[in-house]
Length: 312
Image (cartoon, rainbow, N blue to C red; front, side, top):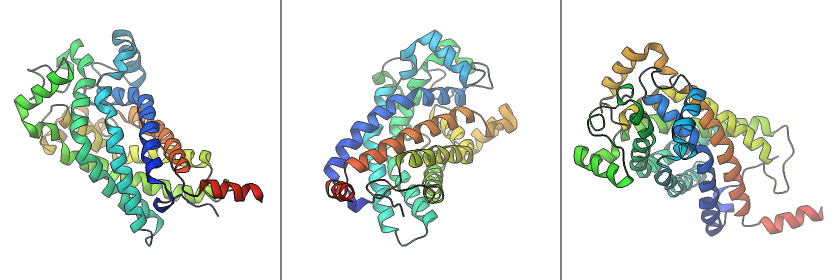
C-alpha cells in the first residue's frame, strides 16, 4: 500500500533549501500563463484580446518575450510566501491525521491559504499592476481599471507603482482585495488538496509504490493536473472578481459583481477560465513534481530505506 511522506519524515534544513530552489524555477515556467490570465480578466469584454491564444500572440508581437515577465521579480518573492504556506499545510495536516481523507486536505488547505494570502496579497497587487502595463499602453479605455489607475497611470518602475498605491490608497492599497482574495484562494486551496488526496488514493491504488513506499511521481503528477482543473472550474468567478478589485476597480464586491454582470452577463463565470485552468493545471503539474521531489530529497531515512529496498 502506497503512502505519502509526512512532516515528521522530513529533514527541515534540506526541505527549505530545496523548496526555495525548485519552486523559483517553477515560477519562471508558469508566470507567462498567469500574466495572460490576468490581462484577460481585467479587459472589458474582448476589446483587447479575443482569447488566450490571441493574447499570447499579441503580447509576443508588441512586447517581446520579456513582456511575459512584467512584474516577475515581485512575483518571485512568492517563493518565500510559498514556504510559509506549505509549512502551515503540512503541520496542520499532521494535526488533522485523525480526520477523514477529504478533511485532511480541505481543512489544512484552507488554513494554509489564509497564512499564505496574508503574506502574499501585497505582492499580488503590485505584480498585477505591473502585468497590465502593456495593455494600458495600447488603450487604457479597454481595460477595467478605475479609482487608483485610470487617471494615474501605473506605468513605470516598481518604485513608481508602490508610490502611486501609497499616494492614492495608503497602506491599505497593498491589501486591496484581501478579503475577496481569501474568498477566492481559500476554497481553491482547500478544494485542490482535498481533490488531490482523494485522487491519489483512488488512482494510486492501481499502481505499485516506489522504492520509498510512496506513490510514483507520474501518478502524483496526474492527480495534481486533475486537481488543478477541478479547483479552477469551481472557483473561477471569485478569481475574476478578486483580479478586478486588486487591479484598481471598486473595492465593493457587490458593485464589482453588478458591473461584471452588466458587461459580461453569464460569461462572467467563465471569463479567463481557459487560461486559468491551463495555468492551474500546468502549475499543479510542476508544483507537485517539484514538491514531491523536494520531499524525497529531504526524506530523513532516504538512505536507509533505499539500501533496504535494494537489498530485497
